[in-house]
Image (cartoon, rainbow, N blue to C red; front, side, top):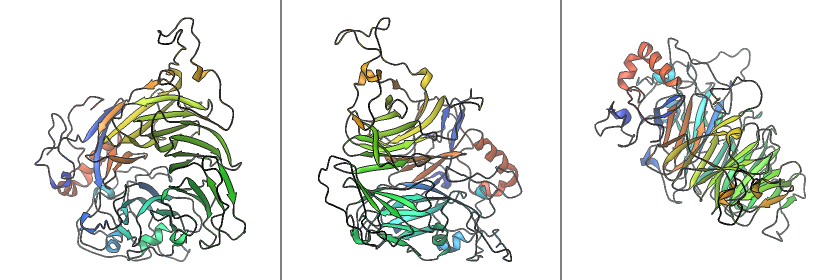
Length: 548
């Protein structure tokens, strides 16, 4: 049960809430309302194999669009239902957990479906019927979570309350460590997977879901057995709008550019890197080679990469503590800056391409401005390394009229301190520190000029040292909420929710204010029977302060 006075789960909670650890609240409050824990996703712990050591779980949101079908074909029925954790992945997927949903959770990978109170709200009515009926010609349309744990890739249906995944893909020789999805892929290969061994695969997500086995089917294999680079894959990404170009970053400071249409076994040799500390870009000598290019970025690991929405720029963060921003087509370093301390672990772009977030071992979230080419804010609030950052592109300021440029940004961060922090950035409200009159003296607010950090933009191609702590404005979090018992590894914003994931592979879905109330009202009238079997965690909640 949930104690209505404080919203904390008691030890005698129901079976649907057992995964919620005692002491963790099932909601957090923001100025626009409460975010409520709706349900969780996890994996069958008994099936994990740690022969290759543990890896940190990452999560990717994948939205499968309508599958093209011949005009003479008849659309398969999607009204099947199944339950029971011991049933095969194929049978459970064929139960139609996506096909006829009236409610869809959609992230940045595709358009959203409407929230409806129709006669069948599928995502809330996780039936436990034992009828197993299905056809391999199903459409597969829906929204999925792809996450790695140990030597396995798990796929969960985001539209279902079932905690267990619908598909497991096992890798015998190495652990999967990163993945990416392209919702606009034209030939079906829309999912990338990078391994600890350096190998990479491209596959069709729909094809994996249709297959009943536990191995990849129809995969293209790149850098097989580390033939090009045998260091660990650290990050993988599709080039936006390219129809088949993707980038794989490695732990030795190199990233490689691949074309999925080319043979992954094509000969690719690159010249010896002369200076480990300098950017060098080399192209393959043969037209059939794959990878087609190598970028040597830095000495030490590249920890994360991210493309701007239009694909014009790519940001990298690494073990050396530097954020680097490159013009992708010109293959040129544009700007960058060092962390206050230690390695940078994660990065993310705003949708408009104006700002980049980074997080790392200095416990800070750093806001980088592309226009000013400098750090414009440091966000203080985490008590340990920051492991994931993301802008909330679905949030809009309560004062926004929908016209003109965005003046306020909402973003989130998660860390090894198990906390989710939400932040609001409004550049008009940023107070620029002033230059001090004398070393160690008081700031000269009346006659002083702006600190040297703000005097001018650095030339293109300059990597800046870390600015002085006193020169950068500080932001405090809007919300600080402990969401898991284990250190966190990532977060995703969708139109209806915020997803948080811990490095052990447990995912929580926090419904936004308004959506949770809609779900509750719909469920009471449409699915009262099912809700008695699987009560919503967002049902009874008490009061809360912003900071918890």
